[in-house]
Length: 196
Image (tube, rainbow, N blue to C red; front, side, top):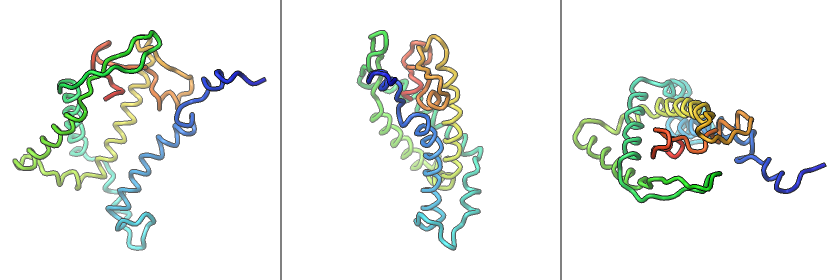
């Protein structure tokens, strides 16, 4: 016997369920790497040409300490912007208890401050934006590794009882969607890890 419509809706998982979640988690990094390969090593063609530099592409994807350090500094800078740049306060969707959390909406100002900082570093000679071009493949790898490690951290962090988790007991889906509703640091604070 089949369940009622509301039961069927409750059993449906977001983003195509486990197969869709897995496809996105594996597919997006691969598509991103493929587009980088196509533009940088394959003359802009999507299909490999006869003169393709496959070795150069593979070696460019190796993470470097320089790329990791740059990404860590950029991430700390962005976290500082989210935490301290003023912005309008918006309310999120009501949670299971009826209350809605507040979020500082300062993304546009943070974007402009990031552009200004990049321009200042380039114009002062303290940092060359050429680094991003030279290390692009390594940065892709570093960011992908960090995203998976951070998601793994959030997966276990959100399982703690104080986070009011949304656990489906489907590990891939829970990893993709996150197990905690609103993981914040400090607990109950303003810095929302998923929003960031």
